[in-house]
Image (cartoon, rainbow over the protein chains, first blue to last red):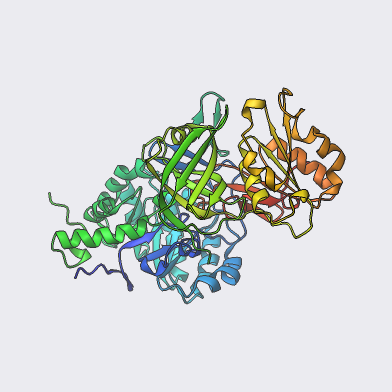
Length: 303
Length: 260
């Protein structure tokens, strides 16, 4: 029987399929459809130190083979999460990973220190790539000194596995990946959304209240795949591939390019069952190709 | 945990209902879960690159013995247009039941239901399911003209119907809020429910607030997921920005930050 388990740092995942932050709520919403313990991990909705209302409506625009969003990290803050949400979700039998955000390095540190105390949070995904906030977010993730500084400071206090989520809005993703690896990141997840824009020509107005937003969906898959491939050859830490994964074939492509695991995001909006279908599809692929372990796929692109 | 389903349903009817709306009836091979009037379904139109996301539609009618769901669909853009072009016999994928529906009236209450355009669907559904004596159920349905109204003969048994048209071709001339029942008898109602264009619902909410009458409205906006994970379909409320898909689409007007 095919073994779908994967290991990232000291964490064992039952399979390589995770749901991406901002597309799977706090796991409860998916659990209304199926048992989330079937998933490799759930990356929880991004949290910040304080309550954030997010950006004004409209925050979403459908685009060719994808969508733009400008949610802007709406959440009720880490303390609300700890008091009200964590107790409801802590018994799900899957890895729950907190997506940590901040406007300043100090905020990232403070949120990390609070999340450290939560036994059932397996890892922290450091989000230095949100394109929809005015301060912090992507600003840290698009320069090596910025990415290094926040990773270094959070690494100092973070007692959990530390994943750093990278922005694709950079000239060379390998430099950023190497920079965060050098500061002690245990893994990198890539990519977050691409900065994009949509316009209503008839009304001559932007479709998002923020004018620009983050592009996701199959439209970005080939670029994300290329970036995972580049990063795989630049760093030794495991890579979690993200970007327009809609089915098992997409997920396997990311793994062949070097991803040890994948996150499914926008596909969930189309059908919340897609992550489960991908798990089945990977198992099927392994059987068809006579593969026993996920390691037989990761980085095994034939050249 | 409220279980939600993702299912392929077969379209058994897709016909123009009037000048602006289509009636789409879909049938499931499985028994349907219980729907509350005001709840909605999220429909995957097709897999074309242009229509990437689902489109949400309020439920007009459920037939639990036939396992059928009916929707009133107004063409607003490329998604709804494509949906109205799908032939009977083809299947589409739906997620349901979604959102919070209307608060049911309590026995012996008098209720006023106001529907505009395709918003008459949920109002007729609520009239049918209200459980009240039809004498206590009053509906004002508004449209631009006679040919924009739908045939409500099957619903007459559930309440008293009044019509408005902007051109006076059916019922009273003007908007729903100009109807004599709304103008003169508003205070006789315990609860008011509305579904239709924003301007209509705001005008209704203004009067309901003035008279301190319970009032719920069904909102509509752009959604990506429909089940509370994307946080795109927000409405500003006294409890902060809330998702229309999970905290609505039905809201009490006292929770909204409408400038009315």
